[in-house]
Image (cartoon, rainbow, N blue to C red; front, side):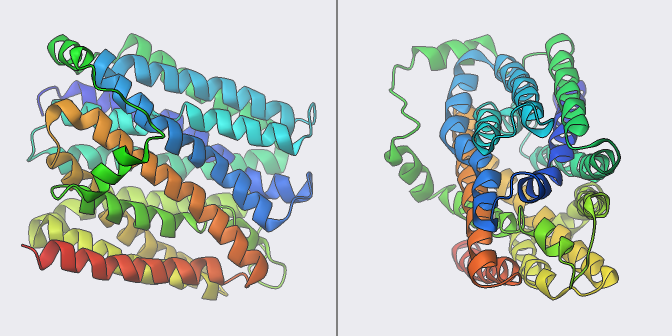
Length: 402
């Protein structure tokens, strides 16, 4: 790596911010059902609106980061997280107990949620091709560790102090990450490349579908975007519905704190995959095979959740899911990044994250729909089916063409 301190700063920034994000995850479905009395399908929409806004705005931030640098985009993103969490606290505290304000707060958070794609662009700036997977894995580990501690903190705090207190903690953590970025992080994109990109007068419209079609059909990297999209969509089926599944009185019957612990366990196993397992498997079988293997393993990790009737079996399934998800997501992003020119890293990675955000919107909406109209097992079963399809696709477009 060209600058060994930069990835560490990015790791801490993403970890602190995702810790705050993770705190909110177990609260939304429970609050929506118990306080606002919203049905499962609407909960899916609320869970997904954040990602829908990411879909629209992440390419904008990626485009701007290629022209004005990574640091201002990261600072704006983290500052937006502070404001959105404060708005959310008004709803959770009962000052404005409105589903509309809840949706607006989540939408506002999604607009400014540009830190992951910007962080990936930073890693691309400071790493060689050989170190790219390791660098992307560091971001994924920070993301996963945010889920290790965030949901359990959110679950325990809400169980003991009410829904609003954890949201204030989340806002404070995002503020800490913003300050860390302002005072410690150093810009990684050279002034020369920024100037060159600004002089490029090509128009950019994030709602222009041609931009996404061009990326998806690009013979060098389009396949990695498609794989990432379907994998994220399949996994996102569980957000909003897993909490409802775990709370079922005739099932696992978990409370908010216990559900938070489950999400934390999911994050911990995901982080362990990034730190200890990914590198070993990559070295043994290569990145292409690792990507296909990760997709295949995730079929069972998703599909079996709905059949979990005991805590031990559920934890076993989550380990499988974390392994598969940790392998396919990280390697797909790494291989995508290696296929892009340096001057396009922010833009293409932004498009990829944007489409990933669309998948995170569609996933909870689909999960909420099938949960309400087909049954509690079907968000997980259909997630496994979609992963089966993308596993076959991955094999034919990666292995058969090489």
